[in-house]
Image 1 (cartoon, rainbow, N blue to C red):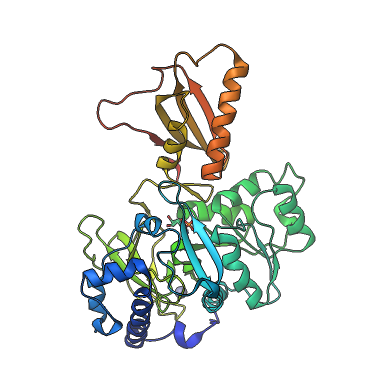
Image 2 (cartoon, protein in one colour):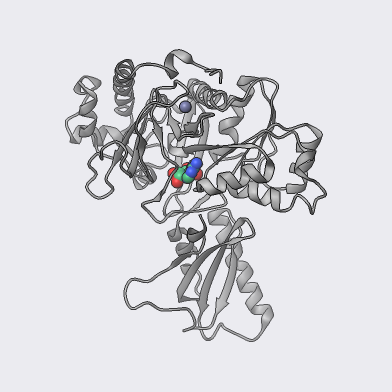
Length: 437
Ligand code: AMP
Ligand code: ZN
């Protein structure tokens, strides 16, 4: 196997050199963070007033953790460290109460991100001449635009098809000889399940690879997609707070995801004690971004559970690898790649006076896609036999929910007293997918 790198010097840097580079970049990140109202307060409280206060990488532990709620509190500009006129792009992702977390990028920030996405694509063997169909959503979500620029930079022909419209996806794949797709794993399974119905079979396509991410999936799901399409499937991890795709990416060895340590400083901590766990043990991934100037974020608690895989990868890249994400420590649901907090749903339905007090959120597989079902009780005076009234109410709930969480739920209305009541803590979320992952 001949290994090709995008930035060989950095990708194969020895551990000592990598640490020196991280310290240098961390200091710069602290200097920029101190330019933001949010970190100015946070860092001064622990006695950090300049990059010189960070003498070794150990000193990073003095910096308080940052959470999604912190980012929400800093909305909209509390984490901006440059003049707004230098910002050329923003992305946003769900916050726990519907206030999004916003990330700003300067032109140079975008170039550095593109460099990383290019590196990731090279690591899985993509090259000029490939036809790249990007089935991740283009928009505020980072999945679509994130890999787009890396793929162009590499010289691939990019088809920005975005998500949905399965019929058109098949047509584009066939007519333009798509060789690489980028999609959520559930969408890959969905594509396969309706291939026959649309009159296609795997041999109609020139597909070689799928890059899948944005939602949890098991090794079995990877194997299944590989077998169904006869292709190679690679795991891609990212989150909007850390730019998006290309925080960690598998290489062609499929033996864990290289977390690009020159660009992200990684810690894995016990979710309760917040102390670092030994290499190989599972804990919460904490990340600091070292390559973005407009929105510095330090020691961000991702809530994602993973472990560092000990040892070097056979591909020669020295950035350490993390395991497939094993779960989350909070209650964020990922539904067909979209983040949804149960609190967002509660907020919407409880604002509607017709809704009773008991409700339940059920998530289950509908074929290969995820389906969100919101079951609510309605007041006795509302619960009527008139199907038209009930349907109108249902549609209003659907519309309000769609406006808040951007996905289309199924809504079920029930008479008071029908939904189960727990003696202790209410169980509001029933995720029936978990057993099947
Ligand atoms: P977002 O900020 O919308 O990009 O969502 C980021 C979250 O999606 C992460 O914190 C993870 O929980 C999840 N996620 C992204 N990529 C993966 C992946 N490859 N495997 C499992 N979960 C993922
Ligand atoms: Zn590797």
